[in-house]
Image (cartoon, helix red, strand yellow):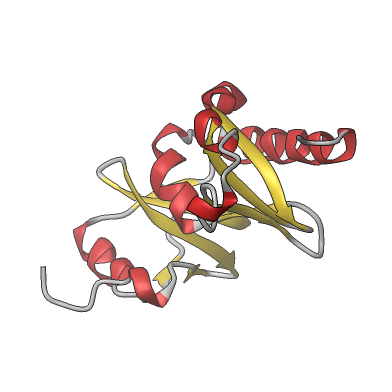
Length: 152
């Protein structure tokens, strides 16, 4: 069961997602977003969250987001790949050449203008992952384990 303080920080996270990416918090009503450790947020289905037999599973759900030390949050790659299709702000659509480079873990040149912070990278409306804008570069945030190593 979530306490008042935990519910408040989860609501802050959902507001952040709505403000930053335009993903309506209504999308998350079917799920339970919870703080697993300080600054680490997970998401799972309501049925899975209510499952109490700890001997049967080691964790419920997946890492959804984390708090940043300077304020705000960062969504996980998994969260972006599942929910990024609903984003309407801070999204960059890449072309085929950029897609190829991005899924291999390369950074991209920022040709999208005045962006800041975390952005969702999509190809033909399919969320690939995220990048953080640093000057004129989109720094790839896709974990090495999720990158494509072979030719497509």
